[in-house]
Image (cartoon, rainbow, N blue to C red; front, side, top):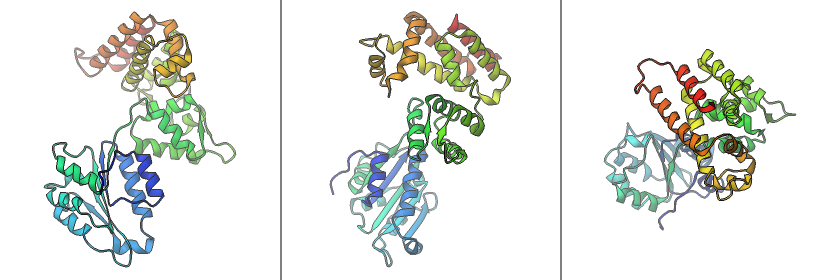
Length: 342
């Protein structure tokens, strides 16, 4: 069998839905959401319900060794064309020589799914990795960056015939972060709350269902800073200082760092006066997304942006206790906002 090429979550799911099954799926990485999605789909759709009792087995890596997994995989299915073996916590399987031998000659009637979370296969095991690739699919599930979260939210909702505006998207991303299991759970809750006649997620819906204020959130703070709205920025900081459960310096620092880092890059655009050119330079999805950077370049000089980036790093270090014995997060945030806006 030819060695498999690099694959994506979307390509794996497309093949599964077309019932084009590989003999081995080795699913690894730090983002458990995609691993669970693939494994759950295989568990629910490869076999018919009446076939699963005898032909679908779930094992745990802490309870079995590589030889036992290989033995399970070499069994013949009973009254079915296929059997499915799902190994959870595959990262706990030691001494993988028996599995390596199996991968080199997998059973054509077995679909073996290895779920290796919180890490990847040891890169030094080159023959083991090569054997996995020769047998089927090796997929690394990576954590999404903060920059990628809005697109994930939009696509997740669009697939369920729900629309969302950019502000609501950013409110959700800033509040929940890159834990996709939690994020999709919150999105599902929002979807269920929508009336059939209005399938739109608005800032008010986000406030009602997720508990993020539509007026005091990371999106509004960034907007206030971009526009040098000192009064609004201080209103938001005061709100979060008085309502620590609503947000903290730890959630705002990455948001502000990413903006000013991109703003610094925007200055080097071949055509910094063109919104479309800046969007293309920053690899933004839509030209409208460059609007804040165009405003930022008018309100902040390149030298000031460099100083702000340095200040954000300083505040980040202080928020983690470096050279800061007792200054609370709220005071650090006020110090940062004052520095940015003055």
